[in-house]
Structures are given as structure tokens and as C-alpha cells.
Length: 84
Image 1 (cartoon, rainbow, N blue to C red):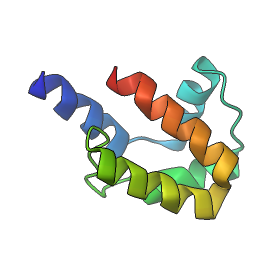
Image 2: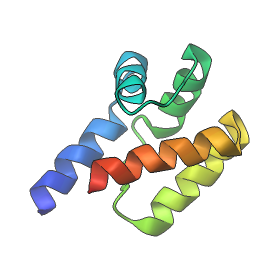
Image 3: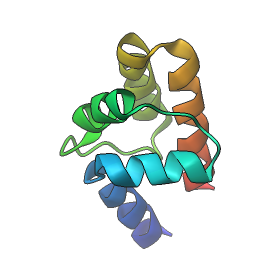
Image 4: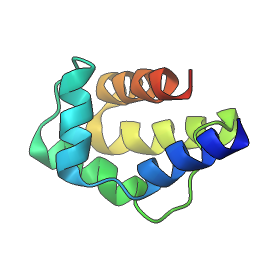
């Protein structure tokens, strides 16, 4: 299980705008290119562990300031889908 967590966290911490937009479309989350760029800037290379509720919550709060609370909630739902 730890290996799978590491793979998912690595993917999130190294995601590109294009990949994020692809996943958003796959999970029916509407994102603009600017929003994707903002999200990628917040997560890329930050070594965030989305399996840690505290760290994920902190990230979602940071995202809410940049992309708005409703969109941050949708991104959190995407994270939750990925960790299940």
C-alpha cells in the first residue's frame, strides 16, 4: 500500500498543467488553464502527501485563496478519488 501512496504522491508533486486538465476533465471538474497553472504552481515540487489529512487540508485552503473555495472543494474531491 505504501508503494501505491508513493506513486500517487509523486504524480501529484510532478504534475503538469496538461495532465491536471486531463484528470479534471476525466472527473468532470471544469478548470481553466489559469486555474490549472495556479494549482500546479502550488503542488509541483512541494512533496505534498495527499494521504495525510492535515497536509491535504492545508493545501486545499491554500488553493481556495488562489482559485476560490468552490473550485478548491472540487479539487479536494479529485484528491479523495485518487486516494481511494
